[in-house]
Image (cartoon, rainbow, N blue to C red):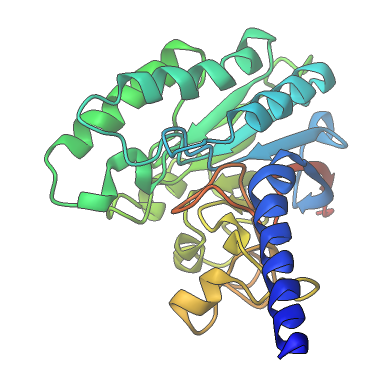
Length: 300
């Protein structure tokens, strides 16, 4: 009986430690991932340039991870990459009046364009109130968020493309950035977005939900970035493929890092774990991520 009591106390102690670590410590850590991405025909002016990605702020959830978000933005302002991509879910289940959540989320990322760093975004499912997908307010909330971001100097690419000049290049050899709307609530129009890019032009693609990647035609996205998954948010240590996401969804999930053997030939997807939370304010063996890509040409 004594050993049973000690065993129970040990288990309770481990659980308490994991709760403290996952709720207080790990969400404040920043996992910086340095990656190299090759893009065929990359203009010489973009060679070696650095592109940062952040995702899933989820402002509005209880105990939102806003402190870590601000620290990541401060780090990027200091480093001044050539481009910052924000792949959706700025807010989380906004209530009757989402103004405060939108103001907070936009205020967090506003220092990026204010520092002269080109910053682009796509919206995510939570930005459309998709917890209640029949809610007629969802379009209004997404529109309000988009207006606030663009007023702050962050264009939102909703099934659209933009020609990007490298700093100091004058736009002679642009790199195209393609932004695709969220798969939930059925706002993804990849053909319309990609159709705005000249044939054979170098491009990178951003989306919120990695499921959208599968619909891209071969060679259309030598570099694609997504978020949405939070990397599973709660994972079994040393086995990142086993997470809460795998438990609730079953089957194959595309949750974290480079996703191999997925999508059409010539396309490559990277999934960022995001910064914020979903369902509960905890991250366990799945810290917030800042991804920085160094662009390289794949040759002719």
